[in-house]
Image 1 (spheres, rainbow, N blue to C red):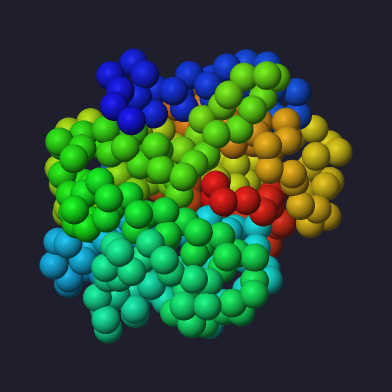
Image 2 (image 1 turned 30 degrees about the vertical axis):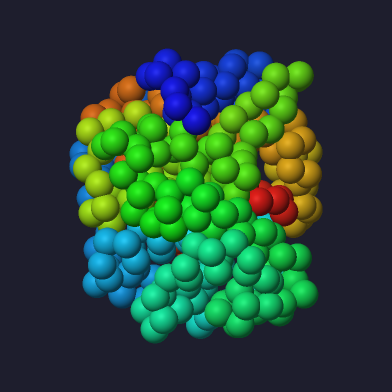
Length: 312
């Protein structure tokens, strides 16, 4: 999916989320709170040091490229986290990341041709999960799509996917957004609303892993999931319709693609854009700071919005 600056994935996401935020009915950005909130953001946002249990820092470039692409292909399932087996002290995401890290460390990446036919049972064994769990079926489908694209379009080389972006984070997001494994577009009031959370975060992770230098990393938007809206709500930046707030706190699953769920994601993305404009931080850096903040007990003790889908 080749695109110029104005119609690249980040710009599509940015424009669509601003449009949703301008007409949202269930979620509002408290713009009067933004100056003080922006002033409280860190002046710089250094990423946390690599965690050997969930970061494949020591591997060669091809293996790290495969890891970044495969991990982000299955970087979804937050709505299912309460139903999976978590490792002691690990969240759902870090449970999945740790399982993949161990597999790659012990056996290397799956060859693309092998990945293109992988089944849920093999993924379940790697992650120590039930092979009949719906999430594992979705994981296997996403990885098969990755394997097919890498085999058919990149000569079986995962590093070739990153090389094809020619030093542009936006171009890598554009490329991955064309794969079924990274699909992430909703509809709101009859208009398509692209989010492409995982396509964009894959580009950020490729840079963090030292696989490429992207001069345009700052063009990426926030990575639209359920945790950043949760943090922004508890911090008073987002306000919710009382009924929606009650449903979330009661643990009710939100329908993926419903107006409420789209507004939560879109308003969080747009709020981060406004915070970025008020600071020297990129949207991706602010996203990372808020995502890490969400690990604190204050945020973990309150139910967050959950929806079962393959977007996040």
